[in-house]
Amino acid sequence: MSEKRPNTRNVGVGNGRKMDKPWQHALRLAVMSRDKKGERRLRLLADRCVKSALEGDMSAIKEIGDRLDGKPTQHHGQDEAAPFKMIVEWAKSDES
Image (tube, rainbow, N blue to C red; front, side, top):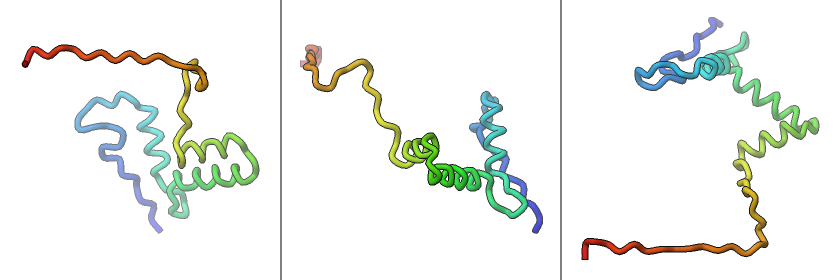
């Protein structure tokens, strides 16, 4: 089986813009390429993450949860049980 080259057109670069994230571009190329068996490397990384999670690796478990369910929202210094004050103001419109 001949090794296919990854699609490098417009990967990480938007319509004629200067590539401002070369590391991101290089990683995209690497994970979208295929190994000797024809599997995408991104799939192999995902499989390894799942395997690690099944073996009890908490960081892998957290990563899978964050990717599937989304990251939990952060409360910035707010106590959920504490009362809060909200102020709403209406501005007069000149179009009356």
